[in-house]
Length: 502
Image 1: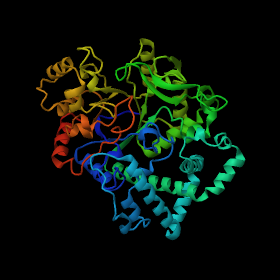
Image 2: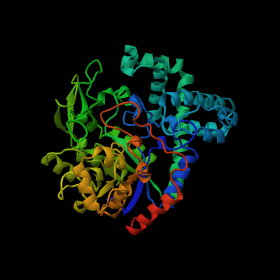
Image 3: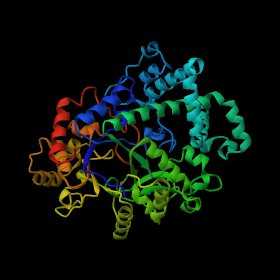
Image 4: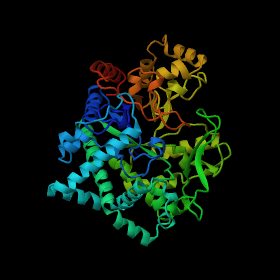
């Protein structure tokens, strides 16, 4: 059974890194962040899903469960590879430094990646051509469908289920025709994936060599407008016209009085079980190529999940349905060995569901999650208060779905929560972000994670995502150059040493 040693780390999605190209990327800023983690005595860099984004620019609405996000490709690394020239990077738009303008970034980077691909085809040395060919052959099991899907999407600007019927239903003659007609575009999509994996795995190696492990993220569901659903409709609850019959969500909870209607199609678990959950095993294998530890978003959905009929305006009218539970993870363990998984087990549970999810975690040794922002509303018995923890948890000051600590304290929390927090922490609240970082680091939880925003004591405007809302400012926040100073690293390192996490 995989054990989590007493360690700590920082949550920062790569899109939030600083840099001059409108969005964080896998260039020098990624390496400098690893250096900061090492200087601060940290053991983990936690990221969100690295998949190419679709609706609302959310990494939890990815276009593929296997592909990487080409927007993360570093133009400067493409110069180092000889695929761009310094002159290609002379005219960069005046992007805002503090946020991502996705529309502007997509337009700029798409043109830049097209230019890099053209240069690669025209002048790449044989060693690079062979490396590209090897990548395409090794990743063909997902890459071929993905590249065709993206080439078709670029020419249609619609979700796949609104394409021509013969493509929607993947008629062999239609697929063969478009594979030939879009051959150049398809190869360009494969090139982008090759460069993403070259750059990301280089960052991961750099981190691992310095004692930093990557915590990746698997959303339990995939978007309807994804290559996963288009290429594998038999694995999802779709009708004869390939429209979902039921979709994902959660009932009313802390975040929303009407629940959250996510809208992903649900899996046909009984179909997946027939081949030993092969799609999931392949997905986990890819996740553990990109990361050392994997957090599973909405882990409780493997035990039971909220199923909402298509057509409902909210998630209120749904029902709980049992998932594959231990059967899936026994298959994963048999195929991949014991792997390091963090189970996101937050939300409202009835007694039976909580017992079922806890038993599932216990069988495989997967730690659950505790979020300190949830701790101060229920009194001394609240399960999110550190004196009620056991070691088999990851404690967070907040996650990507929470406000920053300062934002929570100033705007989101109630006065009763603030008063209880001040008493619990024996503080006046003037340094509340670091008070909660200290509380997390001092707890018995084996793993403690804070966000870059909380390290900087940033307010509500630095919040990364607000659940049940779409579009900007979600997913747009960026770290300013030089914000993570040597002084912050030293302060965090001291806490990390004091509480035995180095």
